[in-house]
Each structure stands twice: as C-alpha cells, then as structure tokens.
Image 1 (tube, rainbow, N blue to C red):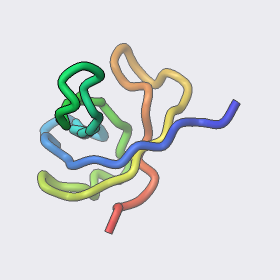
Image 2 (image 1 turned 180 degrees about the vertical axis):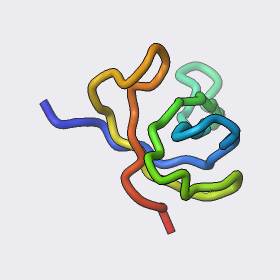
Image 3 (image 1 turned 180 degrees about the horizontal axis):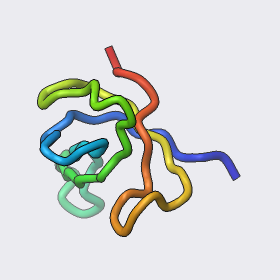
Length: 78
C-alpha cells in the first residue's frame, strides 16, 4: 500500500526535530452543496530543523517515531 503524501503549512517549530503542519482539505457538503474547508494538524519529523513557521511543506506517512509523530517531511512544497 502506498504511503500518503499531504501538503500543508508549518504552524509550529518550537520542538526539536518536530514541526506541526496544518493540512487543509476542501469538499462539497453532500446536502448543502456548499464548499467546506476543514483543517487538521499533523506532527512531522524534521531531522535538520530546517523548516520555519509559514513554510509550505509536503509530508509523508512513516513508521511511528514517537507518541504523536507518524509523518516525516519530504521537501518544501514550493
């Protein structure tokens, strides 16, 4: 099974080797037919501490690194 890849914006980089990435998805409501925006935060492993708040990044699923980290940073999305 392929690993999921998501793209989002870094919202926090205060922890060592960890960034928090906010991923937004848009979908049409089944009844109201209105476009809805939902966002979810993911903790991702950033080994070199190279990404800062506001950066666009791509993250990929990986084996659990810690209690909350299940994602790793691939590259910047720009």
